[in-house]
Amino acid sequence: MKKIFAGVLPTLIVLTSCGENDDSTFHASAIVEGTAVKVAAQTGGYLLQVLVDEGHVVQIGQTIAVVDTEKLGYQLDQVEANLQDLAAQRRIAMANVQRAKEDHQYAKTKYNRFLDLFQKNAATQQALDDSKIAYDRARTALESSEQNVQSFGSKEKSWEAQSKLLRRQINDAVVKAPLAGTVTTRYYDMGETIASNAPLAEIIDLSKMWAKVYVSETFLPKIKIGQTAQVKIDGVDQTLSGTIAWVSARSEFTPKNILTEESRTALVYAVKINIDNPDGVLKHGMPVSISLQPE
Image 1 (cartoon, rainbow, N blue to C red):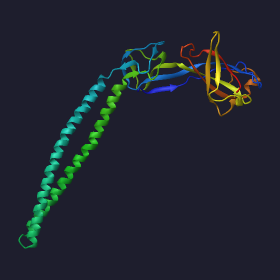
Image 2 (tube, rainbow, N blue to C red):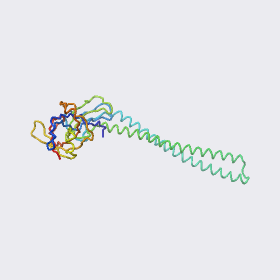
Image 3 (tube, helix red, strand yellow):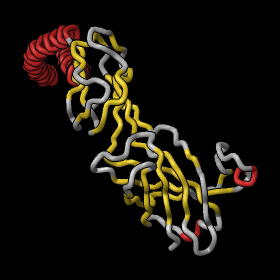
Image 4 (cartoon, rainbow, N blue to C red):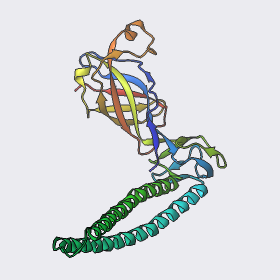
């Protein structure tokens, strides 16, 4: 999956009226938004294809662009050739270890034989010393050949890691949509060169929208997470249902776009409302009126 820069666009709240008497309904105006995701091309390079345009509706996993991987393919071929060469060298090294083991065993047996003969005064000191030197050399050669084989393990891991990295980069050159939604912005065209991890397009999921309103501390005890909210589209005779998904645990001053001095200095709590939008009636940035009935 492609690396994405996910985030939600800044919320614009227009708190127009709040009837917050004990038995009143809370009313507010807000701007609905969808989750905006900037889809990045993890593999940089020449854009062979750009398959979407602004306004296109895409499905999750749909290919939206393809980056040229010819150079990466050459690098992968070189790495694979190095791995094959390393495997051949390992086989030779293993054969050398086997010969070193045989030489070591022969030298050890010969030394033990001369030692036994020397203890029986049937061999000279010189003969014993010569066999001991040959035995020590055979042991050193065996240790060296075994260490050589061990070194192939780290080399092989290094080349395999490079192979996996190149394969991942080649795979990531096919940029796919991480979610279903609408393409709102396309940053590059076919034929341009894109940097690694640069955003290629922005997709907004319009199936699940959300809005944020602010309630006072006097109205806060009257609402809870999971509570239903009524969402009316401005200028359209249609009401949708929303659900309170989150209530801030920290108070804050009313956003500065509230014009009255009384409202601007009031402490309020942010409330996020999720709104299902299966028919696509709501659009990103559309103003709505939200009503909350006291529990």
